[in-house]
Length: 207
Image (cartoon, rainbow, N blue to C red):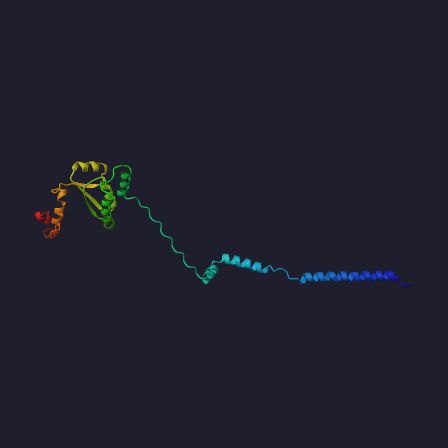
């Protein structure tokens, strides 16, 4: 009995399709195995390196030693210490702010003495006369000694009652203002230039 040609043709087609299907599966499987996979080892190695470096202080020290050292930052200036306002200056500010009495000297006259104090203060400062500007002179000579000489005893009591911090003394002058020019000429004379010791000042020629 001869086989049916149609049946044999169908069998050949089925075999061929099966072969091509298997070949396709083999190619797919081969491509999946042969394709490169993302490697996780570098990440794990990096992670392990980071963890080890973070937990190993010696490795950090070694790495820091290999790196060039950065220049040291300049130190910050020390905080200035707080100091109180000098008592003489504080008293002068309060006094002149709360009074309407002006000094007895002009600005030009005050500026002359002020320039001297700017160079010499603190110093021993002797002032002839006591007035409303006396507290100013004490403040300008802060840290030094300022002494006021006044011939009016009642005036001394009046001023020191308001300004007890002033050091003032009562004196009696044997000369007057109108004699100033003659006294200056006498003081510049040869007889008084040799007066160097205080006890010699009692000599009539130098007094």
